[in-house]
Amino acid sequence: MSNAQQTLSSIRWVGLRTILIREYGRIIRIWGQTLVPPAVTTTLYFVIFGSLVGRRIGEMGGFDYRAFIAPGLIMMAVITNSYGNVVSSFFGAKFGKHIEELLVSPLPSWVIILGYVGGGLMRGLMVGGVVTVVALIFAKLHVYHLGLIIAAVVLTSLVFSLAGLLNAIFAKNFDQVNWIPSFVLTPLTYFGGVFYSVSLLPGWAKQVSMANPILHMVNAFRYGFLGTSDVNVGVAFAIMIGCVAVLFAVAMVLLTRGTGIRD
Image 1 (cartoon, rainbow, N blue to C red):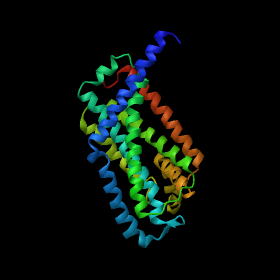
Image 2: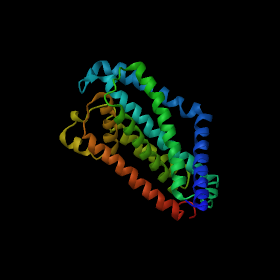
Image 3: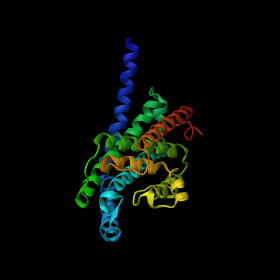
């Protein structure tokens, strides 16, 4: 490797590390807004749905209802926080005009994408860890396959971090930043098998639910804990990997063109 290549690699690494450190600092600096609310929300879900409603429901899929919904609640927190971190951070950079400094720097688009998506992954995993601790207070979780748990949560976080980046690229105001999480992400999450097994649905509703990618993500994650899933786990991971590849490619094209930034 020539000196020029080594210098370029060093510049890229410094740039990536700088973005990641800034994102980490942002998450920790406002921990009362990033880490505490998911813990409080999850506690409320367990108290209301797990304890009060769960007593009447009994078992779900052969498991205690609180144990059944725990993986879904963890994944729901990971999805919303991974998405929210990147969309708010990148749009904030657009709004503050300092994203242009990155675009004119020697950093390629893929480094910028990895930096912001890495921030979303960090927040998603931090929140996932906090919510898991809360879940363990209310439910008995047994790890069936640790590798699948880690793979599912990382891939899901990457998918929604990239989705948040695309939302931020196209958003022109704060209303457009909040529109997709409120009217698209939240309904898909609630209909993604977090609180119920799709086996309880009539045939047509089950088929419609299968088109929801969040259903596959939640069930792949649940399989890692409980060893049971409403979907084919292999297909679920194929969907997640495919989504990461497609969203990353689209983000590369848009950022290279300067879409939403140079318009």
